[in-house]
Image (tube, rainbow, N blue to C red):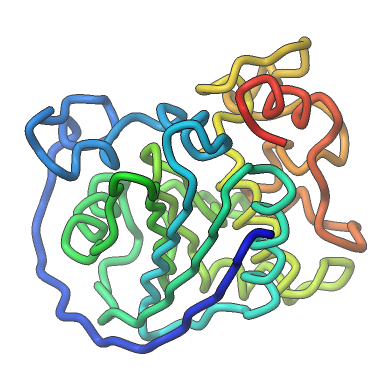
Length: 256
């Protein structure tokens, strides 16, 4: 039987301002002698390690939350169930702590990496693979007009959610609740860490969206591109699921 726990505690950390160049981002230029190198690889590099129990039997998720926003407990429960359904991990733990808001909105990818590097505490160990999830107030610098970014997976074990943007996305009519949008965003970005679609986990059948790298072309799938930009949730009554082709891809790469 798998043991899954959600551990929530508060810790106010001091944010240290620093910069990183584009070369410090997720292009794979990491020092192999760096003990953190295994968590600083390009997106999709650890898909099999996250899905299977071949190299890591446990999964430890660290959530760092900007002190201006909060995390939906129901979204975390949904994430845990999603991970149970798609991975072969024996133990899954989720820890949550509060960090001082960086107050740097809108955020570039390099700024997100810098915030992670100054706040992340969990890294891979012998039998545990670690994932870092960052919750921020503010917005992505890629937002334009009505097109807003809810979240981004940017390294092999790292993703960011723009909670203020998610909160605003849940206000118009004909949209799901904020917690449902947050849940869909968490699962969508985690599926990118799993290598979907065709970014570390090879597509077994032709279902890659030709207009949006890393996304699925099957209507109503969790991995359609519009989920990442809020519009994909309009009119939906619940959090979308992975379609059979995406599930087949994960199963071919060590997942359930």
